[in-house]
Image 1: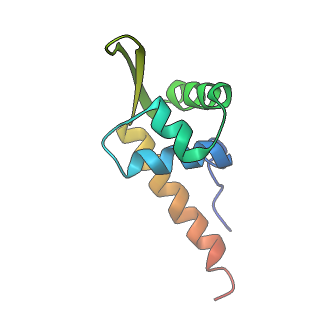
Image 2: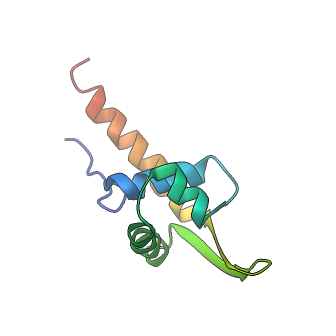
Amino acid sequence: MLPDLDPLLHSQLRLQIITILVGVQSADFNHIMESTGATRGNISVQLKKLSDAGYITITKSFGKSYPVTNCEISNKGRLAFEKYVEALSKYINLNK
């Protein structure tokens, strides 16, 4: 029996965001937006879902004259990503 894929990470944009955060210590909102090509509103919604699940932490601060939103993957998020990749690899290797 094949494992279930985490529905939270099975969304293309949320998977993109988590993948970005796995590779860096933290990323600001604008970097995530530029890297994914998604709209500001869509990024906000997906970050909230990931944060509510405990997969990321969001820190808000104030730069020189503008707000800064910084995101970092949590241990729970890293583990969920690793499990997702492992489960996906079982689907990929199904016919080998």
